Image (cartoon, rainbow, N blue to C red; front, side, top):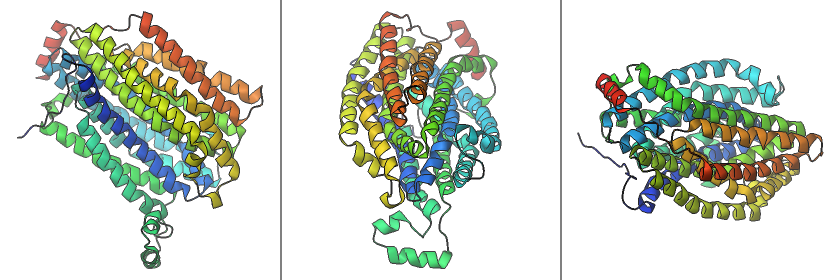
Length: 493
């Protein structure tokens, strides 16, 4: 059996080259993740502002679930990377198998709960039962929840390989998944009636013939969820086939999925706070959606598009931050604390320059960015204006948002996930939601109050984590003691 080990070792030699080799595919993976949301928004946007608003109302609950899964699997990255740095491959296999097992159980539970509760929960973020927007939001949310196992499976695969130092293989699978989603979205959403792909290729005649033959006008918002589940499912299944085949350098077998209490407790100890961190962030997103809904439906639609474009900066920052987690984990596992700190500072220098460019672009092209995602004939001008204002206010603070994520990732990579949790909660629930509520209700600023509340939180949170990075004692490894390693390795073997 041939093996393709694309992993990167950051514990010795120059830092810049290996860090870029590790991080650039992660940034690419996150940008591809953006493509999921942008394709959905672009295609659904052909249906009008109500359809986009329905997606926006659904996102808090989708993000809540995704955040829990991605946060929980952080333990896989941290523990795998630290055991890789300590050259303990037996523990790498044990942690990888248990990460997959834990996420499988959690995803199954969340899938059932989310599907059943979607109609009950959506009104809490602003939908009105019985309306078209509520119906579309329920359909979209339920289908995405039904595919939670695929989403969590992809997270587990990516987290394990990230800790191992292989970030290219997950990027390749994500590329295939995004391509599948882009191909399926126009068909499932628009059918043959208003298919944007046929129109772009000048095939209106063929489009009309197929519509006359089949009568398929698409599934609307529901179709975007179906396309996403199918494309994510294919990527997850392909990833696990590669992992268990031994082709990626980790010799994993089904026996490693057998429950092991000590390893599960370690995963929950490290991953639990990370899952809570991202869950708290998603709940804050839900809270912000409620605040925006207080302003009006036009503000909700503008906020939804703004957040999707926001991910062009946020998710690459997350990708680079994931590289920081692995770099810190491997170096602390090898007892190289000074090198771990240097890796973080190098990532901040590289990311800071990119974030500054993003800030300038968002401010300069605010109106054009928003206009690209709506059919002007079916969209209220107020939505376009509010969306442009969003980028003019928030865009200049992108550099602070990016640096916050990079520095907080250093704490997670060290296993200090409780510290990262505390700072994330402060960022959202102290620096963002209370000031935003005051700006809306007391100052009467409307949507502008939301935009300014987000901008202020970016700056304040970055200052807080920078101070702790300098003076805190966060860089302590979490690799188990040698005796515990030997016992667990014998059990796993």
